[in-house]
Figure 1 (cartoon, one colour):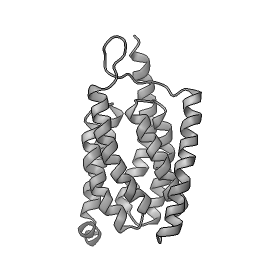
Figure 2 (cartoon, rainbow, N blue to C red):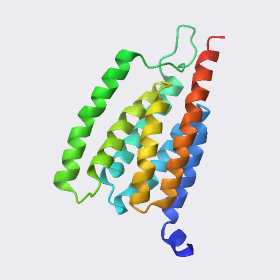
Figure 3 (cartoon, one colour):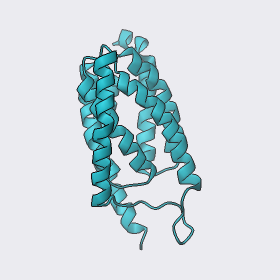
Figure 4 (tube, rainbow, N blue to C red):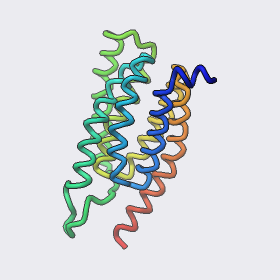
Length: 196
């Protein structure tokens, strides 16, 4: 165990930052976006070394999205009362469009992984990556249903990371799965309280 910790200290630091990020996300704290820059910077190295190339690539997207999310939450569109962006529900039409975008994103990611890499998990790596791109956009726009997407992504990711031997990260994502259920309930409550 001591050898594993010594060899995987960067993964452990990434896992700790992941727990901080999750706590901030549940609270809908704007600081989640700053943690969201640090965590993916660490995981670019962890995932590349593990041969999870789509997960490696999406970390770069996460860094850019975290900058966007911070700026959007801080200075973005305000409602008619001049208040900051409110938590909202995804409409059926939006959900259909987001599902279609996820499918469209999956295809080239899968093709790249099967054509240009030695990935032995291209389907699951592509699936979680495509879904994560869309879910992060939903988080930036404060959609309650982003939690539903994260429940699926986190459960799949946890299994994938156990399979690839990234055990601390696998545990992190297993916890993410459980906390995402709580986050969904909490954001539903917060959404309702905005109008009281």
